[in-house]
Amino acid sequence: MKILQVVVDSYVEVGGISAHVRNIAERLAKRHDVTVFATNDKGLEPWRETINGVKVERFRCFAPNNAYFFTVDMPLRMRKERFDIVHAHGYHAFPFHLATLAKGDRFIATTHFHGAGHSSFRDTIVRLLKPFGKRTLSKADMIVAVSDFEKSLICHDFGVSKDRVTVIPNGVDFSEFEGVKRRDHEGRTILYVGYLIQYKGSQHLVDVLPRLPKDVRLKIVGRGPMKPFLEKRALELGVSGRVDFYSNLSRKDLLQMYADADVFALLSRYEAYSIAVAEALAAGTPCVVARTSALAEWDDGTTCLGVNFPINLGELAERIKLLLEGRLEKRLFSKWYDKKIMDWNRVAQEIEKTYVD
Figure 1 (cartoon, one colour):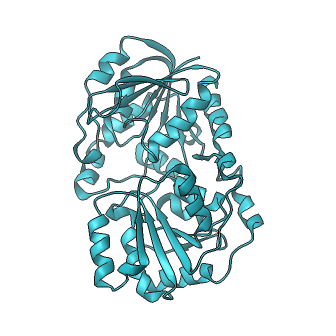
Figure 2: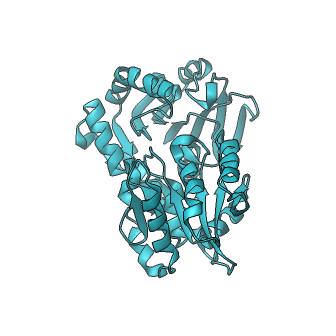
């Protein structure tokens, strides 16, 4: 098959939708002719290149605050070539909707939709675009959601029938975790991995530190506009010596941090799935999550504990302390495998089925 994958950003971003598309595209490229249309808002990436068998074309775009990714060049290119499958990713940006202009025999939409924008302005835009979004989804032969939460949201917000939406979660490369073992270290650690923006909730982890034993450290992996605030807040609370920031880690180092952590925490207000939580659980690290959006689906009362939203620091401290008291047996984490956590190879196979059904 000749397949076009449409992604909102550059395709080489470390996490998020790019990671999802990259893992699928590279596996499909072993059996099919796969092209990716991506964006290049700063012009830092090559306009054309082949990555692990995937042909990548990038287009100029307008992306204020790393959002929307409006492009004129991409839809013009879409009209010049025909594909068997056009697969669009990322409801919250324009390339997803522009993909309906591509010449293709079958249109698949993976929305990564969580129902709201990440600021009041973005939330207003999301609401205004819903009629346009409904039109896009009406053209899809199949809609892919990465969680049951996302499926229910799509059906409710856009009036889509349940039989037109299939749930295929994000994946984990289980082979990456082979040989990654927890290392002995002094003290205990809470790990956060993700973009540093308010809705992701990293500020709550700094705020809760004074309520935790003094041997507990917070390790924050990621970049974003919240970092100066987090540094200042840690200083105000007298815990700056217990907070470490990391960015641009190698994949090997990141996996080791997952394995070494005593607790992984994500208190995000909006998530359609969360690969970070999946990877932490795959590493055998227990998690604390906010009972919001798709994160609530991870709360099993054992390997992953939920806290109510808005976040109460007393409840958060209690949940973290429970998990810090003892390391859970590795076998307890296996219940997630092939259900909520799939290997990327299987994810690609399930996606491929939507192309021919």
